[in-house]
Length: 257
Image 1 (cartoon, rainbow, N blue to C red):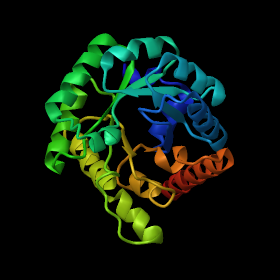
Image 2: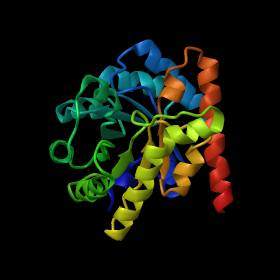
Image 3: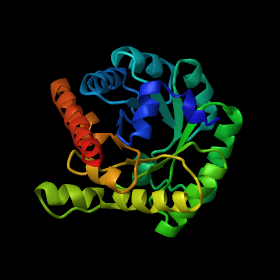
Image 4: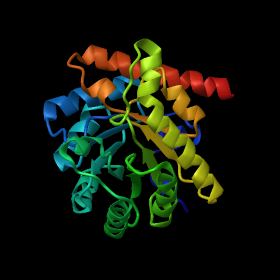
């Protein structure tokens, strides 16, 4: 039986229907007030999952503030995961790596595979998502995704927003911003399918309401959105953005029925 069957029913169904929306508070965001705001917005806006830094107290806070949304914790230190799971996290994630690149910290394929194996060894029955570093050439991203699933990853996440250099205003600029992660979602989804793997792909980093339908069309089962929400100071604006993302995904689902 797939570990994905252990996820809450609504989250599992959203992945099956390729309409899952994850709101990301930030891997390095340990500010309780900020995490609470993002979590409330995720719950009120119709998200399926809230992603927070790997901390047991933040997990409890996110569950309460979001009115019971499933919580994913993100880290690059697998030994931090068990305490967060004990606090109520529904799944764990290695990555997203975007916040490390400005520091000059680069994650290669071998390191990500090792982190995956360590995480799976610590938590053999917990759903594990792993981010594929966008700094790798696309063919290496594809191969790493296949290797990660073989090593125990249940979901694969893409990234790429930090490498994008949009030069246009409006919708065209938003599409330019999302291009790297959209390309990765398409290529990795196809590579997994060719390898006979069924792990869902989450497309994250640099997305907006304009581009989340493109992520689904590219083969993703869901999207992860962080800065479009967590950079805002006004909670009402956060809720509005999450609802806009939810509606964009809803339109994409309707167009495929």
